[in-house]
Amino acid sequence: MKGTIDMASKILTIATRESRLALWQAQHVKALLEQQGHSIALLGMTTQGDQILDRSLSKVGGKGLFVKELEVALEEGRADLAVHSLKDVPMELPQGFSLACVLEREDPRDAWVSNHYAALSDLPTGAVVGTSSLRRVALLRAMRPDLKIEALRGNLDTRLKKLDDGQYDGIVLAAAGLKRLGLAARIRSAFAPEQMLPAAGQGALGIEIRSDRSEVLQILQPLMHQPTWLAVSAERAVSRVMGGSCSMPLAAYATLQDSLLHMDAVWGDPEGHLPLVRAQAQGIVADAHAATRLGEQVARQLQIGVQRQTAGSEP
Image 1 (tube, rainbow, N blue to C red):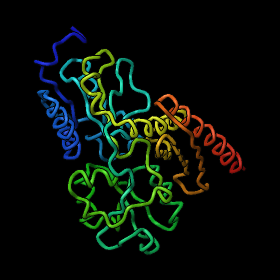
Image 2: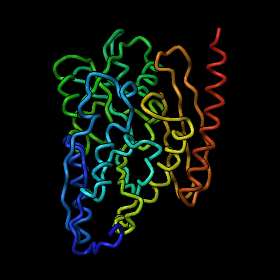
Image 3: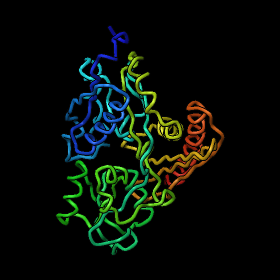
Image 4: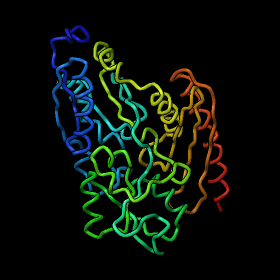
């Protein structure tokens, strides 16, 4: 039956996490597919990543905790596709699964959210900033080593409530999520990429399917945004080569102008003891394979820089 079902008469089911942001993302994909004449249903699920809120992802299994249950639904045939925030998708998918489609990217930047301070630079010495991203921790420490950075887990609404309850002087969130939920007014300022380089895939939505579902792949092709696909292919290549996960303080961000792809990457020390290591490259890319090669080139530069940095810190 696999790959042979008449999709014109079938209801396609989207597996999604049940947070407000995840449901918005699934509803967005649902609306796009319905515009093409397809019938769509949603299958809401709670993942391990949603349940474990007292520990950082780097200590309990990483990004895969947000997608495993959705992949089981795909494998069992209870869902036809799964919608993810691309930055939550592991760089290597399990055998039998593929990233079928990447939609046009929303704002990829990190956002500064605070009830009392308009920008990070306004914070007094020792102020408390919330984030559980090792990338953000490393970049924040590089900008403001005097700050106290504390863990911040939970969905978007939970994180904002913790801020509003006075647990933090400010928090750092993805601008894309705030904008998608109509919360752009909460953004006091957005970090320029050169200040705080985004995570690989940040701001983009990825759709995962079983690799043998060629008919679903065909249905999703009109949703593919090629410039975003090229950029995130390069970014994810950096993370893949570096072994990127929630346990690595790594940033990777690419921009495409005409056919020229510019790629930046940063590795940081979350303890703030070592300077940031940066690498960049640019080149003409016509397809995802070329974009991936550019990302791999940047990753090799970064590896050399990290090796030199860490070797120089040894007693």
